[in-house]
Length: 281
Image (spheres, rainbow, N blue to C red):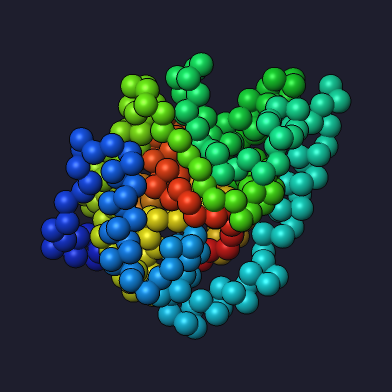
């Protein structure tokens, strides 16, 4: 908490304006990429999928430690559990594969997506639980445990596939996108900080020993295994933690607010390859 408080003072000196409110999603995407290209000129685009371990962002020793950890990653066991759960039949004999296109494999790059039938943004974890309910099973808890393991396995089958998030030219879809964009740039909490303050304007800077990761590429590694957690966690688990760090009341996992933010962030990382699950501090 003290680390964030120290950063809050520094934020006041940052004079960069957020992306214009009237810009189209395509305009936003170009500006977002251009900002990070300018901020990290020595970082190849594809490297942003590695977060603060990317070339040109991470110190060499920090990157090497991460590469060593990825040789025998701590997420291997929960990943295997996720595979087992995904393939274990429900009581009615069906499996998760029955609920998804392509049997649920190689589809992570399309999530979250706007569903015109329900006028909702659908996340992968949301549809995992919808699949369970549809097949007579109880829904799983949202932020960690089995749902993170299943989501991680499904994401693993999409490794190397570039994110391909669409924002249709539909008023409701655009409203979801704008809501997520607003959340990213809006100040909140007692420290009066936005997601952009840490992960855009101060990306690559340190809060004591911690290196702030760039928002470009953030979603590609989720669910992530964090050393701090000692387990896998979903993106909404991380959102809640960030809100608490700036002393703001977190929204519930899978709330419309967090789904909109996930939609915006994944769209902003379009073209970067899925590399989930991943390891982070």
